[in-house]
Amino acid sequence: MFERLFKLKEHKTTVRTEIMAGITTFMTMAYILIVNPDMLSTTGMDAGAVFTATALSAVIGTLVMAFAANLPFALAPGMGLNAFFAFTVCGIMGYSWQFALTAVLLEGIIFIALTFLNVREAIINAIPMNLKHAISVGIGLFISLIGLNSAGIVSTGKFHIGDGQLGGLIVQLGEITSPSALVALFGIVLIGVLLAKNVKGAILIGVLASTIVGIPFGVTDLSSIQFNGFLPPSLSPILFKFDFSNIFSLDMFIVLMTFLFVDMFDTVGTLVGVSSKAGLLDAEGRVPNAKQALLADAVGTTFGACIGTSTVTTYVESASGVAEGGRTGLTALSTAAMFFIALFLAPIFLVVPSAATAPALVIVGLFMMSPIKEIDFSDFTEALPAFLTLVMMPLSYSIADGIIFGVVSYVLLKVFTGRYKEAPILTYILAALFILDIMFLK
Image (cartoon, rainbow, N blue to C red):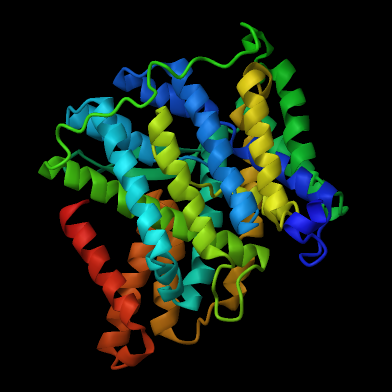
């Protein structure tokens, strides 16, 4: 059955490899089950209900990815987008969470329409090949930074410039002798050794071993395992709670456009970057079944808004499953199954600390560096945009911003060197939209 549905032999993979990869992907992104309810609850939403909505939206979006696109990518409410939902729309702008959910619903509906019209797929194809390789590398650096920071191995530190004025944030060495950092370092070394010995499931073994090692260090908190029955919290406090009274306001337009831009290019970046690493891009640099993949996050977002959560997007942590050998929708199906199980056994799954999942992100970041060898560094009109793409993702803490810097600089360099014919028309349109985004939505 699995062979018929997912064409495992064609993709040179096995059921065991795909299931292990799916579980690994879940382990590296399960933190969203903790973070999303906590973040959205600051808006007045019921945290328990948001937990259920988070898990269910991940299940639905990932199932669509599995069966419609046959790709090894998982979906869930996106980080960054949930922060914008909670702290900007409901915080700074002062709107209700019902208003924000309405914006997410409209975004999802628009994305479904754009997907069927092939607009989003065309955008993917308009990104130059060198930038696609750079996106993979940039995502690798980005998720490594996430892992190192979550474990406390690195941290952000403040510095001062001129007359004692406060400057920006830089990354600096964290408290590497702290229990959390030591557990993460143990995991990184262990996974490295297992990989060197060609042990299958090395990343998952490293995550589980780090969780166990974290117990005596106090990093893994077993006391947090509290069973209050096996039924997930009710969705009723947030189910279909929309506010259409302000849908024609300027603020709604700004909020909607921000959701659209960030989600579109985070998803595009993840699909291209992880597909590049997995060797799934075709000879022309196109993501296979891109239309179906984009439909998955559009459906997930629309469904998620209806049951009460922020924008659903393709997760960069899918790279961890790809690194474990995941190549088909069976990986995504396995991840979806884990999210469904998490609905009923949340305390057990959530006991895995971030220090234990950090090694997986760091190692995957290493794996995603390999496409850098495919970038043409001999041509500066190709090399500089690629460099800006990969370096701006971790520095700006945004996949979308990395793509913006890469595409805009690519167009400018091609134009000012008289090689404007090398860039497709749609690439120029993308650059123009990005510039408008910077001017009016940033």
